[in-house]
Length: 286
Image 1 (cartoon, rainbow, N blue to C red):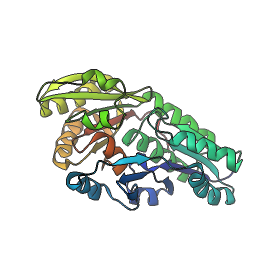
Image 2 (cartoon, one colour; image 1 turned 90 degrees about the horizontal axis):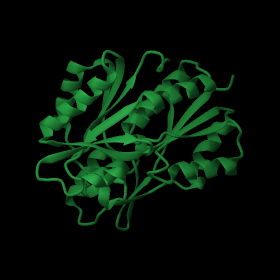
Image 3 (spheres, one colour; image 1 turned 180 degrees about the horizontal axis):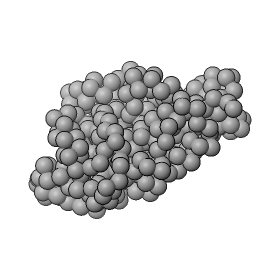
């Protein structure tokens, strides 16, 4: 049985030490500050990005990897005879998935599966890390693909932003445009569904919004054992508060947290705090 290798892109926001630990290949997207070009997570860390975002007079933009860049990452794995599973940002948010599909045609490698995760950042990281752990434990390609499908069906993601400005400016606002023009101190609670950002509800005040994130998760998962993955833009203190609330109310078997990377941070801004959650039993197995 060939070794299963997991590939993803940098919008999964997986910390470098985790990518190394689980042998995850990460293809970087790019961030542009005017003429300056940075590879997401390679030339620019999350902390450096948010400092630059705050100080720069230039609004950053982003771009996807080219098919040729994907090919550069696929070839060494192909040479090993590996079975490759490549998991990417929602095709409705980025052309990254399409670039990966074009790269598959170029390399003409049968044992290469390209997956549209239909999400971004921590819910995508959840799929990638679970897959890489399963691969390390010796699970087959088909077993890992079945687990990914299970995660996609069970998983939910909720988050709150300080402002919709970044989503609107970057064109990633999706159905959340319905919340444009919200009143002062009314925080939009958003969620990922069917590959896009959707409005969930408006909550007055940031602390109430955090409570609502956890309450919705608690309502939907009740007594299920769950894996929770938390994230923030540039607000580690609020993330600590969200983690405490989640651990108090949810039956967590595992809790992880990270900071949004430069590409995702470009499109949501520094004020995002959110969580991805997935049922464990019968779905996530290593």
